[in-house]
Length: 330
Image (cartoon, one colour):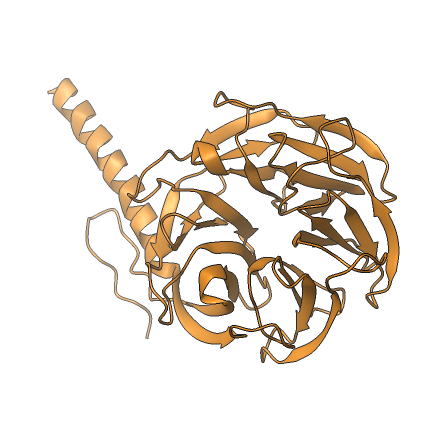
């Protein structure tokens, strides 16, 4: 009798956990709101949208690796505002901008994939500084990707060298971590390195088809995901972003979708499939979330646009100990 009760208790515990996960997933739903941009090289148009940041004023900054502009949009309306960079060899110009991040003073850091340069601009988009360069030595990088800033440090995913490079905000090299491989703490073409509000660094380990989590000093904590197409599996994870609850959103270049996990790597929900319609994706890269509204911005790269989604909150029907569904409040 005792063993039967233990088994029943264990089953009930599992059922409660699954029910809780389903309730969270039920609440995390998104619907298409509007699109930003279209194919082209003109103002407000895209050739290869990559990564995002919000400016100090709250405008949406978008890198375009093909036509070398960083474009600025109103995040609420999607209206084009201005752009900076552009193809060329002058200090303020870019070659193939991919990663972008903004510090607490509003300074903007842009990682140039081809040249290895990291360029710093002020809040009015004026060039200030260029540092790093293409290579494999300390302080150099090859194929820099989607970067982030935390506590006065710039963290740069260095896909060519399979590591994360860390600089101060004046461009001085501090340290790096990660080597090529598939064990915990090793990397294979890291695509994004983004911080949660708790100060943990999540890295999209693209060719290992997983997400790894590190502390700010580069110590590996956990990894989640594996290669595949099922929920919780990845095919070339790329962009990373966090909502106000620190749930982590991951774009997948290979599976053309967005997956959402809690901060421990537990799958919550997903949306998207291959195509060019609203809510469909072609090789999605960067992603960012406006924590004030919950709106999600996705670089729908092959479709040459940015898609914007808004959260749609359903009614949660809580479970009570008698196993009955409680009625929602009226």
